[in-house]
Amino acid sequence: MQKTLPPFKLKDLLVKQAEKSGFPIMDAGRGNPNYLSLSLRKIYQIFESFAYDTQSDGDKDLVFLSLKRDGLKEKFLSYTEKYSSPYARHAFNMIKRAEIEIGENADDILYEVCLNLIASQYPYPPRISPLTERIVKAYLNKTLFQGKFDLSKFSVFGTEGASAAIVYLFKLLKESYLLGNNDKLAILTPVYAPYLEMPALKEYNMPWESILLNKESHFQITDEHLKKLEDKKIKVVFSINPGNPTSVAFSQESLGRLEKFVKEKRPDLIFITDTPYSNMVRGFETIGSRLPKNTIEVYSYSKYQGLAGWRLGVVLIHEDNVMEELTDKLPTHQREAIKMRYTKTEDGKRCPKVIDRLLADSRDTVLTHTAGLSGPQRAMLVIASLYDLYDAKGRYQSTLIDELKRRWDSFYSGLGLDAPVDPNLSHYYAFIDILEIAERVAGKEVKERLEKESYIQAFLVKLAEEKGVICLPSNGFGGTDWEVRISLSNIGLEELKGVGEKIVSVIKGC
Ligand SMILES: Cc1ncc(COP(=O)(O)O)c(C=O)c1O
Image (cartoon, rainbow, N blue to C red):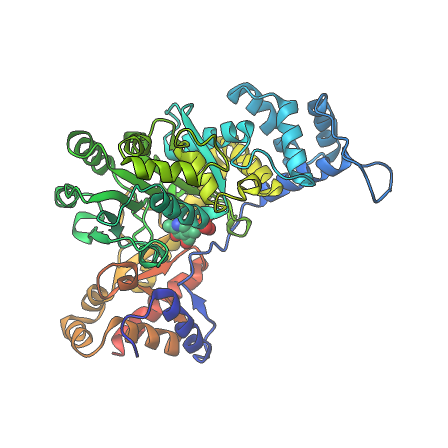
């Protein structure tokens, strides 16, 4: 067997082996949540039926758009009162509180949400509407910036999940000469595997280097890592925070170290940070809160409220970001090329703002007028954001954080080990070193035999073949040999204990 199959190819092989095992398949390879916020879905349904009911015209099939903005709040109040359900009350309260706390007009919110839900028109403007943008920013402020940042100078672009955002950003880096042929991208590893494959694609062809975070320093940023970033060829730094596969969020110390380094030594560095697991760490703070002008924030709605199938993500960029400054310093022919590329959307006299270039890049510039999310996706952005902002005492978030922590403990109890404790953990993935576990549960001899006579892919095939358990190796994520990622999001509490036990049993049988 090939020793270095890409993780998601190896996964296909493991699924086939697991099917032959005779055990129920336990797929701890998938980062897909097996939970969702039911209240959010029920509230969404209420908005959706209201959107159609305010439009209905008897029982005719062909109806003409006749939604009126004025008076929608009053209509929504009497509509939700008829339901006598807590979801309906919550739906109305969300709108009322957005009026009081974010200063939005209730009629405007309802009008926009209803139009987007009905979705008979092309959503406009393509990037995001100003109202949706303000609501998303209020949510991101709470989620990424501890609720204490002024996001008024930031712009948001709604994308089809973080995956799409990353593709558009790679295109932007290339087309805007932010990462030239002699420059380098630094990727903090271990990292979600597809991101390691992106730079090598022929359309990007970007030189890159890995900056390995390690267990000994709890996957935090050290002076040694920063020393590497002194290399002036590195123009862009890519990170996932909290990590996938490590589950660890950067601590206040790491953020402080990074901030000081950039301010003193590399004010020109661009950071792209992907933060889909931020809601699972209490008090989470993103890189952009320390380095707002250097950072492109990518957030995904997939993992927290179980919205992966909705394909919802956002990019957040400061108006006065370092990329604008770097663009001003580009040679004339490159600035001219940028103007030429984006003249479809701009006047051609100046280089468009980075956020507008990103939007244009998402549709190869010529189809920018139909770019962006669908109407229902936009409505869900507003509803999911308001739902979380006005969820009493953060009930959903606490429930989820507690559930993931219980799964974490259950998995470690199956291994027969104390579960590691770290306030920076999301508990979304467990990240274990099989050799270290082998030594602790079966002794040094077994560990040494395993290391000498086997390799991680072979171990994982055995685990799938004999026990029906699927997990992915870290080396495909740019990590070290023998580390393995177990997704806790996709398997229930009891089964996770079984996964731990099965890993131990296979180790002991080696
Ligand atoms: C770090 C990271 N970014 C992005 C994604 C995909 O996000 P989305 O569903 O928003 O495309 C994943 C999915 O596992 C992920 O782990």
